Length: 545
Image 1 (cartoon, rainbow, N blue to C red):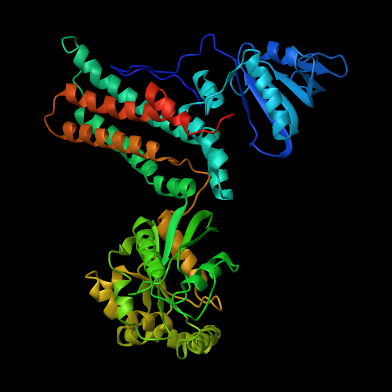
Image 2: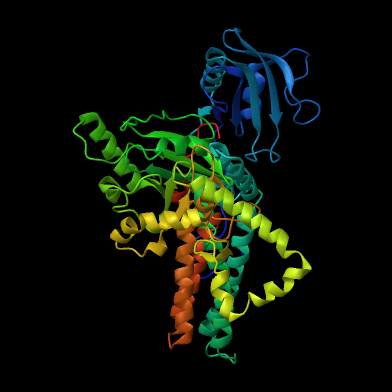
């Protein structure tokens, strides 16, 4: 979404310039290899002429004749040798109603490497230049069809590995983030104009800057930027996925947990300790968030050289992970090897998984009994004769009888969970040994075999991955680390301006802070041109896009 905003003083550029006379570029726009079709795409001032040279229509209708954008059937022919390269469909799309806002020709040939290569090399020999990675989208940006944030969303669409990531990227391509950024930047530019008016015309008969009013205005804008910054966690999770390491000593059920989360047999499960010698990785989607699950070798002292290498990889996976699932065997007391599992693990990015709930003494029976008793009590409490008892139970002397657990992760009251309470008691020595308050550790009791507790585990994973704001794919979000850093820079500059307004900071310095805040936001959409940055962004695209 391209737009024009008033320039702030010192801006180097306000909008991307339209491209002048350009070379015609060509590239294969479908994946290399064997497939049903292969599309060779050209863009530029010579695309129509080159397309007409190589294309021989079967019906006599020339390329581009008749209705715009109509596919024509014919053959691709080498004009120098008259050799038929392939049976093809070809289409000419006229500027400016194209992806790049230039003339675009696409030749749809058979998907074999030889046919694609023959068409591509002939067009290059006739004068087209091989396109650089992302050059088609770069031209769309430079010609004003999309802004820089939308261009990044194109790359995100191509790389999306989940339905949620795709939906969010398509939303960004429609201009959701750009609209929000432009609106916030416009407020900053307006505020800057007020501050600079007082500086430039200080000797004129103008009212002095209303510092209190300006402070209130900028604080509101800072709040909007903070709200936008909070979306970065979800944006990063959708773009990169959440790398999740499953760690623990041997035979606590790490591989079983991996299989349970994937809902298929991915890792070998055995009662023999040390079965997993290397990391096993796979992808699963939880609440729309792609998780890169990494099953690791059991952590223990070992004389086996191969197993020791696997254990070192396990520790490396734990260090590099966004989320750690530390698995313990609930059916047996914690042992010496368990004490090393949590070393160096951050409780804010970890979940303690008390596994093998089905084998824990009375665990499954107790949970079933609890569910049955709760259902019976709820039915009983609906009868009139128990209304008086319910009222009595709310009095202070009976408060202890109606104690409930507070789920510290979700901040909501839950019915007592004896199984989870016992898991916490069993693991208390290990949690206390970490030097961190046991209450900071999230604990979930599960059975990888029966599936009990897995839904609660998935909900907790979602909470850590995206925060307590949940997943709203229709809201604009910061999708890349570049965008997050620039919004962070903008907020820091704006906070500096607010501090200056609340003190005796000169108007000139306040103006510079506001200018920096607006400039950082402008770099997200490309209103602030930085050529090296633009080249770096489009270099990450694939060739042909």
